[in-house]
Image (cartoon, rainbow, N blue to C red; front, top):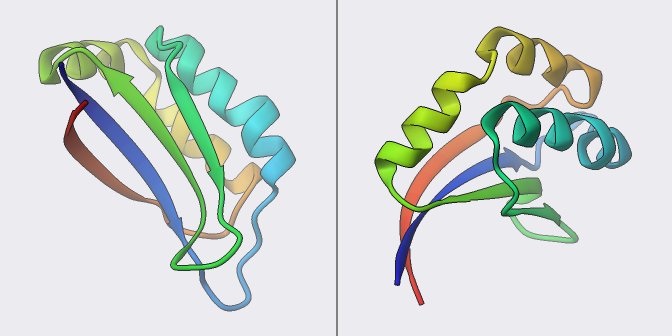
Length: 97
């Protein structure tokens, strides 16, 4: 079965801040609620390129676009300053398995 995964990645950046508790407890539930998504994984990077990441799974590209259109993009974007100074990088992937 193939699904679509939207990953939001936060590159490790010198001097940057990231509040993992806020991200896990407030931001991700807000986004998931607006998008109507229940399949979300949250990474806390211990080493490597990223300090954190979230991975949202969708049945198709169309389902992802529909979910994202339901959300308040301005509110989601405005909330980023509450947990990090890092500019996120987004990647959409096709996942098999």
